[in-house]
Every structure is written in structure tokens, then in C-alpha cells.
Image 1 (cartoon, helix red, strand yellow):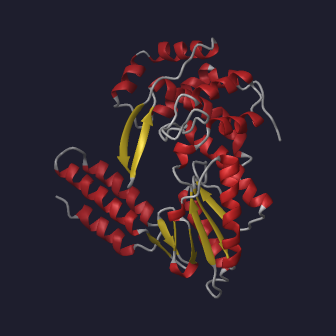
Image 2: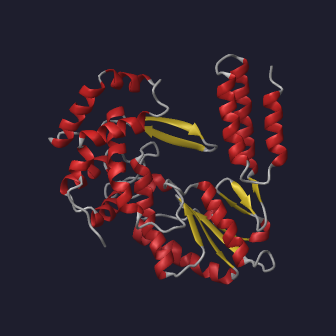
Image 3: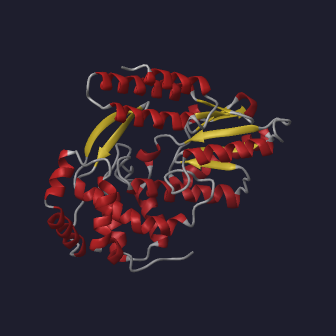
Length: 347
């Protein structure tokens, strides 16, 4: 395993901190806390750099709130200066870990994402089913309360196997232990906040240990993962049934994670595989009904905002193009036409 030293200076270099600011501020310039930080930008950035270099930086508190996406999610929002640190750390560390990720891990990676994941899944379904002429099955699982149950000590141990820089590791410790979920106890501190950019790389690093187990020890050929959702495709249902106990034990013993039993199932591919917002079949895919209802509601809400003068028609048009882009990856001609009709029928 390649290890890396002398990373801290790259993280705290002013050029990287200003890059982190530029990356962080995208789409947030109208937020009050962002405007306040920007008012004295250079002073604030150089103060942050001094705190980091002098080892006096301490991560601030979080502001918690709940969103529906579509199920309720608890978001923990860090302060502006902390989020700049997250971006600065991500910029330096992500390329180091990226090379070790498997090619069928699709979450929060450049040139990957949901649409590539769905394309790869359809290619696999066609291959395993011989273009629909042979029955095959999918084992679909996800992790129960994934972000809230990531163990701090295990995460830190995984990170420090590759990062051999004391100052960088102390900063990672500060970020990781700045937050703990209600799943923590006296022995195990747990949880990474969904609102942190660093949580994306932490999640991938954490689950990469599982990915390597799946590919190198279990020798699973057709496996895909997006954050805590994963699929294994096979023509042999019994093979998938026999894998599940080994998967469950590995996750529990090595990562202190639990399979969500209610969401774990083996399905015939011809019934459709629900993954990444689409229901995939061998020769076509549909938008998941819940996803379709959610984006319809969002679009109708946008129309109301436009009719109330809250947003411009150009802003509404941009939202429309985003929804049409998502729908274009599925067989959804009627839904796309409905969206277009609603938009063009507006005054």
C-alpha cells in the first residue's frame, strides 16, 4: 500500500484555502453567513490559515435541521470556516484514495455518479441474462443508519494506514470527532454528518474496505455500490442466499455496521431492480414512482413560485431542464411531454 506524508502544508497553503473558498461558495453567495465571511475574505482566510498552521484550529459547532429527500434526513451544517477546511482537506486527500476505489463504486466520485451506475447495471443485466433469455437475480441491500453508525476509531484507523502525516491526521481527528450521533456510547463514538463534504470521502473510504472484501475475498463478479446501497447480480439464487450471511458477519465484525433487514431482498431481474432512482429491466428502465411523484411536486412548487413572482421564468426553465435531464435517462416520454406542456402553457 502506498502511504503519503507531508500533506499538511498542501492542505493549509493559502492557494488551496482560497480554492476551497471558491469551491464552497458556489450557489451559496446569498446566504447571510457566507456574505459575512466574504466581507473580510482575505483577513478571514489568513486567520484560518494561521490557526491551522499554529495547531490552534478547533472545529465549531453544528446547526441541525431536517429535510425531506423524500424521507426525513437530519442535516448538520458546519460553520463557514469549517466547511472551507472540509473542502481544503477533500481537495488534497480525495485523489490519494480515489485510485484505490473499485470501478463499480459510484457515489461522490468525478466521472461516476448515478447515471453511470445505472448504465453499468443495465450492461450487467444484459450480460448475465444473455439479453433477457436467461433468468437471473439481484441481491439488493443497504446499511441501517449508515452515516450515523460509522465508527470514529475504525474510520480513523483506515485513514491513517494511508496517511502517515501527523499534522494531517490530527486535523482529520479534529473533523471526525467534531460530531457524534446518538448511536455513540461510552466506548464507541459514531457518526459523520451528512452536511460535511469530508463525509463523502469518509463514507467511500469506510465502505471501500467492504468493497475489497466483496471483490477480493468473496470474488463476486457483478457488484455495484452507491454509498450504503449495493447490488450483487447472479444467475444463481442460491449463490446469493449463501453470500448474505458472510456479508452480514463481515460488516458487523469489521465495520460495526448492520444490514437493513427490511430492505434486503433477492428479486428476479424480470421484476425490475430498484436502484439509484430508476427501476431497471434488461431492455429498458423506468423512473421509480416515488421519484416521479417527488419531482412532479417540486416542479409544481416551482411553477407556483414563478406565478407568485418569487422566481423568474428563466429560473423555472433551468429547473425544467434539470428534471428533463433526469427523465431522459429512462423510458419516460409521456412524463417529459407533460413537463414541457406545463411549462409552455404558462402565461
